[in-house]
Length: 276
Image (cartoon, rainbow, N blue to C red; front, side, top):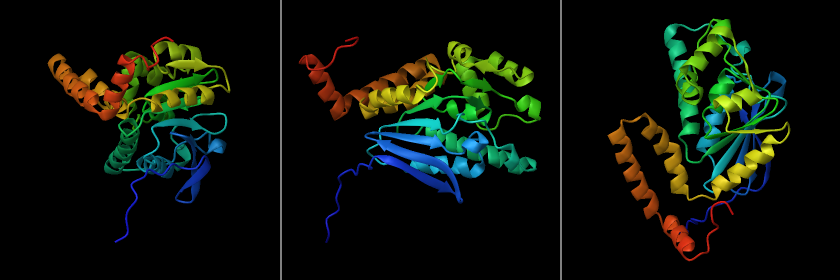
């Protein structure tokens, strides 16, 4: 019987394109333990069609085991201008419900996947593009970034999880204002209210995103997993449930072999000290 190798295969560096139903929807690049996933419809301001959303889900599901962080960005001048309205078709209530739930499913797989995601934002971050950006765990915005939810003016409602994720970043009142009045947040104000954690100059986003993703990839995987999966659930739980979940997660994380090695390295003075 042939032996099966258990060695993790590390993807070769370089850019690859992936197709969704024949359309070049995404490009994927690997740099060591970081995958860079770019929306690749610059001529449409990276507007999201259903095949593109499904392709995103597949790419995140099929990330190689060697990948420990993702940078999500967009080719061209914009991150994502939202739903591709040219693809919008008339649906009955049941079809509309299932369509929205498909987006929910894919975006949940990004937010609650295996590895943390750093979104690099520039230009338009509108509607479904903002919903996608909110799935990331860290957001870096370039000076050109602007945020909007024009659904109120289009006669539609958010359907990609925005009503849950956006208020958790900026509050219900700000989201309601954006949808009712068409208010647009520019990069500096958006960073101030919580849409992004970092603000950089134009053209500097990918460098900063890669810097952060590389740091994240160097963390113990179970700690990253706890931050992604336990922290948002603790925030929604009652005090007692949150504290109990914290205790469970702390016990699991510190029992991992890599965690024990890191603690020993710190105790032996081999670990880099905070702030140094």
